Image (cartoon, rainbow, N blue to C red):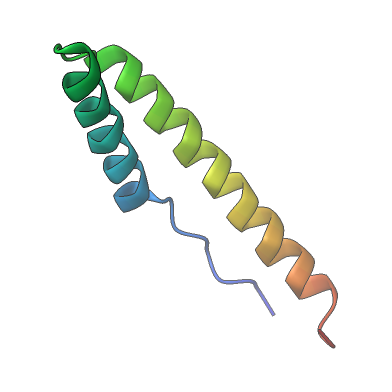
Amino acid sequence: MAAPRTPFPIAEGLGIFIGVLAWGLLTEGHLEIIRAAFIASVCSLAWFVLRCWKNRTRNKHPMR
């Protein structure tokens, strides 16, 4: 049986992007869009990899 496809965490990435952008605006007084986009993309990618790994290991051990 094939494992269900793991969706990419777009909503989480957008939330991280807005959070980092707001944090920079409130603390430093200016927007750093490139920095916020980089942090959000790295976090989203890491979250996606962890989801895929979790789904893959869960399917190998059906008794858990």
